Structure formats: C-alpha cells, structure tokens
Length: 316
Image (cartoon, rainbow, N blue to C red; front, top):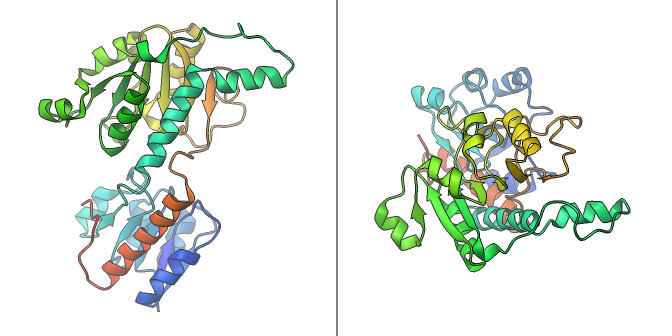
C-alpha cells in the first residue's frame, strides 16, 4: 500500500483526507511531532508528503525515496525546500486561493479593532478602568490612508474592503502594472513613500530571502508617527525587536499580529503582553468552509500525482 507522510495538521483529524486518498489506495502516516528527525524517520517508507507548517527540509525530502509530490496545506511555501524538490524533479503544490476572503476579512477586522481601540477598551474595562479618554486618540477612517505591501489576491480583497470604509489605498508591489493599478483604483508607490504616507500598513506578500525582515529598524524610522501595522502574512517579514522599539518609542501607535516569528512567541516575550498589540493565533485563514476546501483540494492534488495526472497548482 502507498504511504503518505503528513508532517502536521491544524485540525483534529484526517477524515476528509483519508476518504479522498482511498482512490489511490493510500495510507496516511501522521507524524507525532514536527521535528526533522521524526519526519525523516517516517518518510523512509512513504512516496508522498503533505505538510502544513512543519519544516520540510532537504533531509526529510531525501528520506522519502521516489517522492511523487510535496503538497502544501496552504498558500506560502517558505517551510518547504522548493529548490531541492525542483532539483530532483519532485513537484510541489499549494492551494493558492482557498482562504482569500477569510484573510481579507480578518485583516479588516484587525484594522478596525486597532482604529476603534476595541481590544484595548475591552481589556481596560475588564480590569476595572472605565475611561473613554484612555489610550491613544481615535480618528475618522475616511480621512486615513492604508498602505498595502504585496498586491496579490488577498491584497486586492483588502483594498476593496478598505475603500468601502472610505479609506484611501496606496500599494507597493513589484508586479503591479500601471494599467492594473488603474483598474483596481489604487495608487502604486515606492516602498519608502508608502511607509511615510500610510496611517495603516498591511502586509500581504510571501516570505523569502528578499522579504525577510522587510520591516527593519531603518524602515520603521521612515514610517509616519502614529502608524498602525497589521500582519496576516508571515511573521518573518518583520524584525520583532525593531517592532517593539517602534511601539515603545511611539513611532507605531499599535500593531495587530496574526503571525509571528517564531510561532508562537514565548509567553514572556514583551510583544505578547504589550497593551498596543493585538494577537491572533495564525487564524486569518480559518473558516469551516475554507479549511474543508483546503484539505480536500490538497488531498485531490496528491491523488492526481499518484495517478500520473496533470497537477492543478504546481509551483515548480
């Protein structure tokens, strides 16, 4: 029987995946932990890998002799050694559009929570302080500017939502053309201009060697004083020590983090208890519908690979 290594999952069972993979007479092997040593040991008897967040390294991939596919439960690929797979002719797939609306909704919810001090007021009241004037001032959204860094499917959905609130949208994206920007009714700008002119900044780009710590000390210093930062993309896009410094200095008015680096942060990390930081547990992609779609589409891609059929979302 074909065995498929499942490195990790963010849901309680593999019922959906097992039902679909019956078509290929495949058995799923769920790793008890995501340590490289564990994954390497279990990969030896497998011919395919399905992975959520676990580091799927060259060592793990090499242990999976005759690997037919490495299938990502998700969009980003920074946890997979894609270059190594490509070198050895192993297809890598993802599900690039299953949670676009969920992440855009979550981003907008975080923006509104920051702007209207929702979690701040809630925390204050629960500790016995009922004071309308407490904390930073609130301003009219329709007079503010949102800077979106990265303008793929999710970034575009965020722009639509922000414009519904009357927020001006500016965008920095290497791939955005002038014609596309005009069609989307957004203004393309250089990164430095976006940082210095935005009241809200939202990240929607993949993590890579080029984008790692994109927001570092120097770029925080460019930002307009009183800016809010939202990250529903990847934690590694931000230098967390520089973020903390920007918050404590007042350069940033607040931040909302669905993702961090590492994930999760240690409970005693100063960002975790910071009064002007909202945290959610990498939850932006979640809805019952999105998770079910993600699981089924990933499993069906593995079936296609095992049957020698064309793949729908090969990335290499």
